[in-house]
Length: 149
Image 1 (cartoon, rainbow, N blue to C red):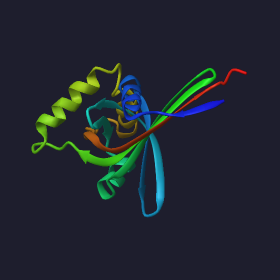
Image 2 (cartoon, rainbow, N blue to C red):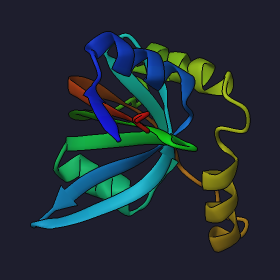
Image 3 (cartoon, one colour):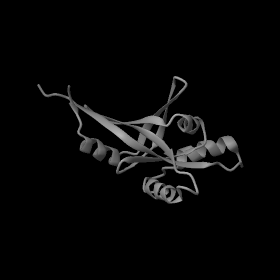
């Protein structure tokens, strides 16, 4: 098997194509990893959540990473973006929040899982919707392919 490092441009091309990643955050020396929907634009990964552990932890420790991968037969790709969490709160970031909503709305059913899960647990209670972005500070990626002999 051959493993190649990916360039920054290759990592970004891959991130523009995918929809699901794994968010890694930590608090008090305890890591937490959860799947999220992502959209890349320039130096930001945009996402959406309902209030819960990941948001509470990221508010306290904004250092996060997102890992995205794809496995297709003998070929695989894995990209990791490290950066900082920024909640897109109203009214101070209304324009950025609307932009995040527009970007995420281009992905099919980007909101369905998070909203459905929280709504089941909360019943008729209104859920707080949280849009956020991660300012990418570094990107790294690897691509593995089966070597021909």
